Image (cartoon, helix red, strand yellow):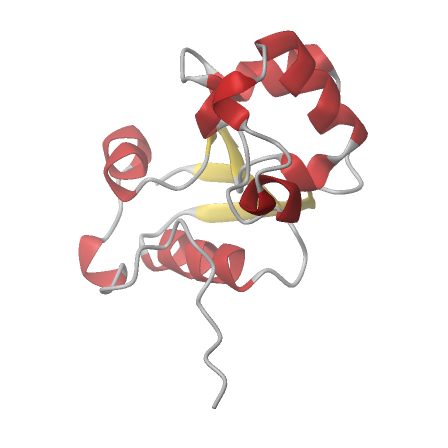
Length: 135
């Protein structure tokens, strides 16, 4: 199995679930804080590959949710600069195995990349933080 360097937002329930899936799949984790890392434009760009800019952004970020930031309308260089300044904009998690890097936790993509025990995934999409229901 793989040694995965995993950048998370500490306390994020979505990242917690993603780590559980990786561990249940036999992977080893080195966990880092996404918010305190000294990101550069070049380093961040290496996680996104050829994905559209709209997939680089954390859809749960208040600025994205409110429509203040429209990821599909942001130029790549501008998006990377915004993320260096405000890491909460970055889709989570960022992961690295060897020299290969990936942003986000699409189950099929991660499975094809390093393999997952799909039985450990469950019904809820692990890309998103669990909803809190009040009432």
